[in-house]
Structures are given as structure tokens and as C-alpha cells.
Image (tube, rainbow, N blue to C red):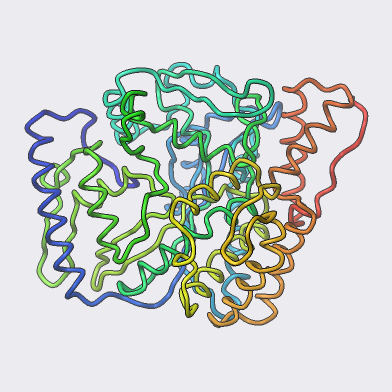
Length: 498
């Protein structure tokens, strides 16, 4: 869904032709995957989505069009919301001081965008949900960024669903229960997406490892506890994203039809398993053929473009998504880890990347794979529990039994991730540095979500209304990002209302 498209509506004949071409793409990809040579350099990459907030009241700032013109940099692009901004970081490696370089690059990209935003009376906020978003923002179309792909996506989702989008998420009081006549709540979800390049023979173990650790990973990084004025899950992005892009009416969900935002349902043996599931289980949302896109299927001396298969893959939002990139010369395969929220600081985000890359590497090379000792259903349940309760979750884990996830991280997973980083070739000091940040977060129980909850609670105890507390907390959050300190070291304010 990152590419632009040519239209927002499609005929029945176009959809039929797209289905045929999608099958043809899949067959070609199967044979190509078995015989082709792929780049195997172990590179990593990051995409970061951020929010724009007005300086005056920290409300969403609908100015990304203007900001992109000011930045005039192709690394910054639209996301679906007019208050969203995405930046793509250069490809790097986890070896040597690569993760330190990643942190510096994150800091530079955020600061550059923030400087431009401040000239427009706004700030850039790297956070999972902008806490000051209100339901009123999502009435009408002003919230949506320009571009036919966003309009086409919304049209297709709403047409398939046939009724309004409902958000029902457990939380304080009765939780959140709201309906929307658009996919607007999806724009509230801003993430940091990690890319890991892998050879074909290692993709299945890497994906299985990423799925197995998804729960502890989201517990450690949770940073989205508030949405539409309500305190919900520690990582409320997870249910919000699932429900905002749910093409199923309730009856289909009851029948077991899979949602398009999906954890999955089984361990895999090949990358092809995921693409085959996508084609077999999910109808096309954006049936734009390669002819409509003016893109050939095959060109002499290069890998097949597989336009239909890649476009379809972009409309099935797995938390760990397979990526095939034909490149310009030799193709490569990537695992895209999509479950992390943005923020809080560049140091925290680099530490989150270190945890993922180091732990996946360590697990892929274990003698007995972790996923052979746990059911897929157990991995899914752990993911849900950790998104709901963050570092306070209790989970079941192989050879450990029932355990507090913070203890599991401290005693097993963070040390294993640090070992994995060293084995990848990261400098010892770099591996230890990010291990200390992760350990500090797990030991104190203070990730971004916990800090936000505690700060809002403190402000409300001292007389602030919920809306005032959310605005003030967002200001304090941005100031803490400026400090550069990792989130577990941020103070929680205890002061009287002014």
C-alpha cells in the first residue's frame, strides 16, 4: 500500500482479471523462490510514523501537506492521516556500531521534521496514539491525507464491510465503544516498522521466531494507552488497527472469517506459505492490475515484478509481514516487523530494534527452536495479553510455566537478545548499552505506556480534567523526548494544577 494507484473504483471485470493475474503471480513466485538467487547481506531498515500536534493545545495538526513541501525530502512521505508523517531511514547493519548509527539517524530525522513543524506552530510527536485525538476529528474527510490510494482503501474496506466501523476496546469504566463511517481510527495508529533481510532458507525460522516473541516484544515497548480520551490497553494500537480495517460484518467474524489485520494461525515452513494464505483466504481490496499500473510482469535480466501479488500482500496487515523486493538487479526477501509503536525516544527505539534483531538471531540458531515448544495459539494469546497489560502481563512460557513477563524479559529474553547482538557482530559496548536500557525498562516496569498512565493519573489527582491532563502529558512527553533520556528514567510529575 506504499505505492500510489490510478483509480479509486473498479469494475467487476477488473476484479475478475485481477484474481486470475494474482494466481498467475503466485505460481510464478513459487517457482522463482525455489530457483532464483537472492541477496543475503543481513541488512536492517526502519520506517517511523509520527504525529503532528499544535503547540497551543497539543491537538492534531492537519498540516502534513505543507510540512512535506517545507521539508522537500523524499525520505519523508504521507501516511493515511493528515496529522501523520512517515520517514524512511537508510538501510544499515546491526554489526559494529550500526545500532548507534540507527539511533543517531532517528534523532536527526525527528529533529529535522520537528524544526520544520515548529515554524508552522506544531511539534512532531513520536508516539503510538496521539493522546489528544477526539472523535470530532474523524467526522468528514479533513483527517485524511491526499492521494487516491487512501480513498481507494477506504472505499474498499467500507464496501466490503457494508456498515460502519465499530471500535470496542476494554479499558477504564466501560472502555471505548464508538462507531465511525470511515477507517479514520486507523490514522491514530503510528508505528515503528523494523525490516530484516533474510535468505529464503532462513525466512521461515525468522518469521516463526518473530511470532513467538511478539508478546514480550510488545510488552517491553508498549506506548499507546490512551485513545479518544479513554485509558484502554497498554498498547491500544493492536485492537484499534484490527478493528479499524476490519472488512467483516459481525456475522462473518462469528463464522471464523479471518480479519485482514492478522496474527496468523500456524507456524510456517516457507515464505511461500504466507503468500499462499494471503491469496487463498483474502479477497482483493485494491484490484489494480499491472496493466492499469503500466508495470510489466517480466523484464529482461531482472526478477519478476509481481505487481498484483505485492499489492495484495500490502492489504493483508500481518504483524510480521513477508516482503519480496525484486530490486533493480538481484531480488531480496525481508521480514517486516509491524507491531511496535513509535517512540518514545531515539534511544528507546534503537533499544527496541536491538531487542528484536538480537533475539530473532539467537532463536533462529538455537538447537531446539522455541516455536517447537509452544503452540501457535499460545503465542497468539501471549501477544494479546501483553498488548493488554504491558509489562504487568502474566504469560505461560516453555520450561518456565506461568511468569510475569517483566521477569521473563529480565531473566531470559533480554540477556539472550544481547548475546544474539554480539553473535551478529555488534560491538560489545553497543550490545551492553542497549541491553541496559531494556533492562532498566523491565526492572522499573516503566515503558512509554506506564509513564503516560502514571502522568495522567498524577495530573488528574491534582485537579486537571481528563482533556487537560492529556494535553499537559503530551507536552511533558515531547519535552522528555527532547531530553534524550530513555523512558524508564523519565520523572512522573507531582505538582498542583496551574
